[in-house]
Length: 159
Image 1 (cartoon, one colour):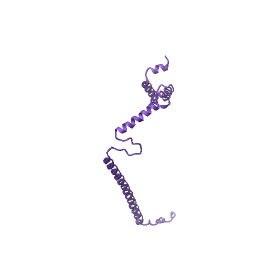
Image 2 (cartoon, one colour):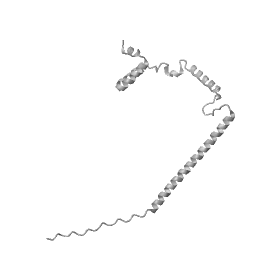
Image 3 (cartoon, one colour):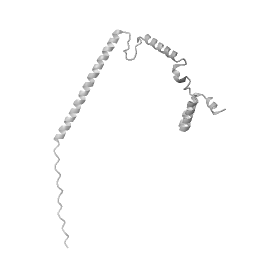
Image 4 (cartoon, helix red, strand yellow):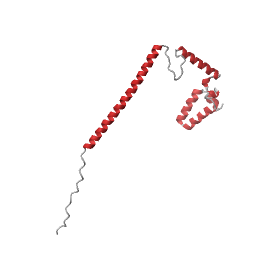
């Protein structure tokens, strides 16, 4: 019994766990196991061909069925089959009108609030700048440095 057959008897979860443990203990061994598992196609990556597993075995036929099922479900929920970019309808015209008006009002309030914040920031910046300039004007000029004190000439010692 070869190494491959021994590893296969443990199953896919055990192989994945063993690969993780191998990475933790010695990364080159873990990398080798990962390459082995992917290269030998034991991880199921190529089971469904180039399309991937979500298409199923019948490809386009299953995709068409899924699209029809999604449209049917959307119609059952009352969305009327709306697409991206369109506003969803609740099926109640009065509520839809109320919702649109509320959203419009909230967007307008948001614009006004952003404008208010901009004005507030400008006023705060202006007040800080004015305070800085006033403080700068009120600083008295620094006095000129005083000359160093003169030291008396050294007298020779008397004998």
